[in-house]
Image 1 (tube, rainbow, N blue to C red):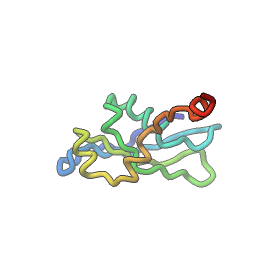
Image 2 (cartoon, helix red, strand yellow):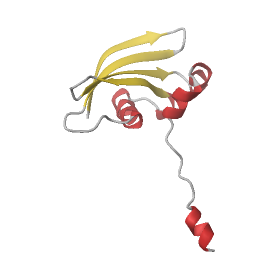
Image 3 (tube, rainbow, N blue to C red):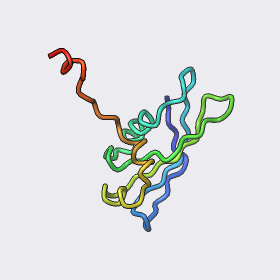
Length: 105
């Protein structure tokens, strides 16, 4: 999977950078939002907590997708502005303790 950033715009009103990018995933399944987020964090040299992938739209018949992400200045700005469902899809699921071990005891 390769990411090509083609537009990066500063939005002072919301204290964030808005990024438009292409994802090329030749020979692979459409990448998950969390995989794209990890790659963007590395490319932009940003903190993982302040990056939000808003949407990813695959092109029909091509291994390519158009994406839109935002990089906030602070976590507080992100929590104040972003909708709950966007934050939820950008949060990694937490490991739940195995219930099987508790049932055996």
